[in-house]
Image 1 (cartoon, rainbow, N blue to C red):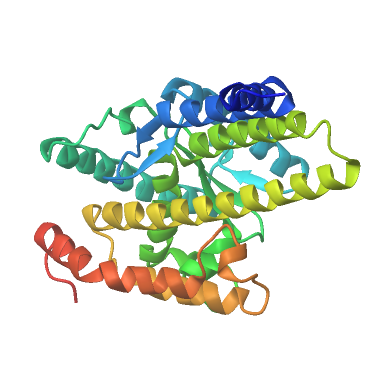
Image 2 (cartoon, rainbow, N blue to C red; image 1 turned 180 degrees about the horizontal axis):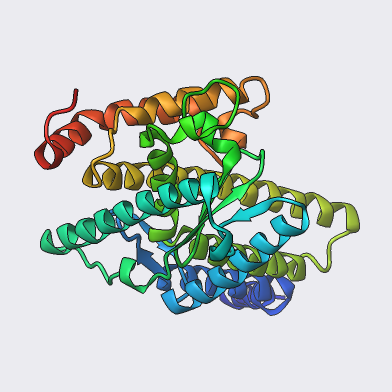
Length: 323
């Protein structure tokens, strides 16, 4: 019996799109279209785009809620949030808090200037700085940490002050006699918030979860062992992409922080030395760079050296000669 080859091809395509595979294919195409439609320019990083489905108002709200939860959690663990009660904000607690807030204010002003420079150069800058609820606290904790949540909610932990200070193995007020390295850290963390990196990570995780669900539906007719193998492959690929995505965010935040640093008249030459210190502290405990969410400290120090001639020129045009 003669068969129509065209009919066979048509039936083949029909079979292809009618089952679970068709559902999977349609879902993945839909996710791809959604991904492309929600790509937005990264503020303060010209030429960069990222997935972001959150408004600034949503970021500020989520940042405020998370900030309160984190600070409450630190208090419950016995770590004091300095100057949380302004009436008892005295002595070293006041000095540390005022230092951090002064650095923050200078970096905020620098960010406003940088926004205007980008607008003048023709970039679409929707105004981030003035929409954030800038808040600064110091947490008395041995943990070497600092962060800036979406919305401008900043915390600096006393455990990082020796690393950014005189590096003598103990934390004291002498560590804030020279604050340039602390400004490097704060500029980096603020850079993440200005570039909406937190919102981008949340948006990306939502898409990855949707993709995982679509793959799971499409594998319904496979055996359990095959399903597990495919899902593991999807997980490895997604994790690899997410790690690279995170490392790119870190590099962007380093550069944004440096741009803020020189406009706030902090010495940019402190940045590579800071990351060399970070490398010494973490030596032997880090995974290979390609398996990490952060670039290696050596890579970061090298990036800063590459950017340094332009940074020094910008600093000296605004702040006078570096010594």
